Image 1: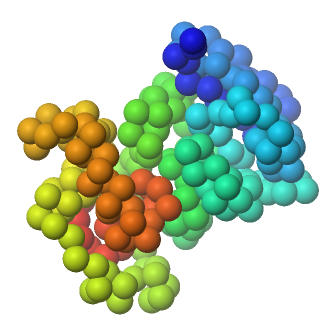
Image 2: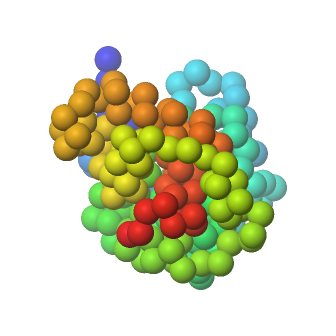
Image 3: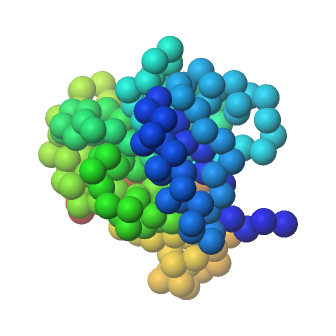
Length: 219
C-alpha cells in the first residue's frame, strides 16, 4: 500500500502545470494522480473516481469553472481533500476570501519550489498551513459582521478544548498536541471534532479562521 501523498493539479496553463508536475514527481513521497485544465475536469474526476487526491494545488483563474467556485464545491462535497490555492493574486481581501471558503493553504505562483514542497507536507500532516503573512492578514482583516462573534457568545468551550484549539492554531498536529497535553492522539481528535461541531466549522482551516476572527486565540 502506497504511503505517498496523492496530489491533483488544476491549472489551465499547460506549461506551468507540467513544470509543477515534474517538480513534484521528483519527491519520493509525492504522487501526482491527476491533472486538470479547469474546474469542471477536476470535479468530474473526483465524482467518478474512488482514487482521490489528498491535496489539490488549485489555480484560481481557470475557464469554465474557476478555482474559487471549484474550491467551494470540493470543500463541501469532499471535506477530506485539502486545497492549496495557487495564484498570482495576493491581496489581503483575496487571501482572506480563499481561506474563508475552505482553502487549507495559499501559495503565490512566484513561491520557491522549496516553499511549495514544504507547504504540501505541512498541509498533509496538519490539515492546513498558514505562513506568517496569511496569519497576519486573518488577524487584521475586517470580516462581515454576520461571520463574527455573535455566534461565539453562545458557544461554551471547556478548558481542555481551549487548550487544544490554541495548539491547533499554532499549527501542531494531533500527535504533537497529545504529547504537550499528556493525552492520547485519539483524545485530541475527540476534542477537535467537538470543536468543529461547537463552532460550526467544516474543517480545521475553518476552525482556525473562526478562532482568529473571534479573537479566541491571539497569534
